[in-house]
Image 1 (tube, rainbow, N blue to C red):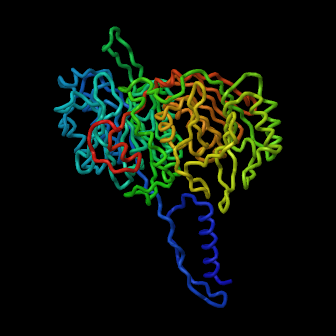
Image 2: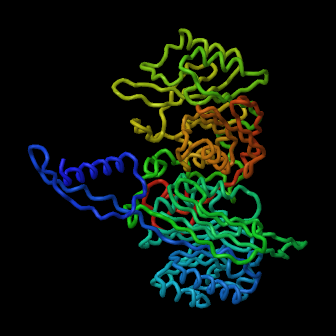
Image 3: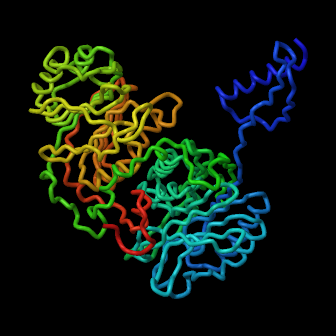
Length: 604
């Protein structure tokens, strides 16, 4: 073999290795040479190398604003912005209300503390963004001619003022944000901003993602142990975006109430989280020996193919089925709506829920023996098994004959135990199609039935149908496969449709995947922020049972191989007091894939 042929073969091996195991390869000079060995002696050019990701440095200003002192705060922000840009940052994010502090009043905003577009007091920051061709986000208290106050973020770029983002959640001193989300195109990807607790429910990050965001920045003023990092990590995973949260530190005395209250912000985290939900940077002042203003730097990488487009290959973005989410447009459970919207719901009450955790076996009879041995004595109307919890991974074509063993034994067991509803999944193979994982539902007094999954998975294109709801005495139950459950619209749509409990038989967890055990548990917990109880079990051998109080979790119980069964009586009246986001027509237009002109007012 001559040298040219050796080089050619080595090149083929390297390219094949890259195709099978893509990694971040360094830039390489490739020499194209022919190989004279063999009969043809053809010269072959190597295929083009994959385009390298675009990288950018982001800076988070973890600073302590002084309450009520706008000008000194602006001067500090400008100094930190200039230092950040001089050290190579191209995106800079200051905290929520960085120019004013947090504990302000509408009177203070209208009396001079507020900022008015085009925000002349921020001219130095605007000019810095232009000089360094960078993008800077500054949290301000904004006032307008028509509205006394908004909690806003001002966006500067190379061309000056690019826009304003207004917080959608309200507080006593400010109105609900009334502008569509601004997604800013940059050489480093599309940028969007969501303010602090607007990340609590999935809606606003989701809308920004659907409009093309690659990076979502979140100016924040969120202290304490409220599982913020888990929420932000779930938002990053379910949308395939970077989340960069700029929080603050320091102590602030709130004198707005009858008694002064001290906000200790030193436990407030600033984080950078990658699109797989991994925390790449985390900082809290309380972890430092001498807390002080800090500039936190991180490097983000964006696939070049995404830049300038709305392309997002993340499963839970690319495989959305908006026709399954019409309940998002419903009027119930908004802050100004009647507390419960109970029309058509079963009377509220208590429902016994049993969740069983195990790794399903191939034999339905063996699975029944396992469930029977772990059942226990406590009664339960609703039972959630892991996915494939009866059948194992064998595809059924056609569906089992439930009048014959071992399948009939399952029906007899469920009837004997007084179960109203049992849910798992089954692999079915409809005529002429490949295997698909569908919900399998056993209800008292009804033949077993299957319900196809909503979203595409593997060869299954998904049904696009609304999620299944079953009314039991005392509760409305929503049923989802594990894969469907991680699409963030689904949980909110079920809550809007009145679901008191969401039951999830899952087979989604896999070692090292985006939705491994810890990620999936975190996503399930975060999903219950929409205000429903949750009962979930994954075929990898773990599960979760969450009791909700409507806007907060009362209890969270994990199941495992050593603690495989939990029974809980869940009370539905509290969750019917849930409060969900209110949408503008332009919000619904994005979420439901419809065209809706910009404007004010609630959705239908």
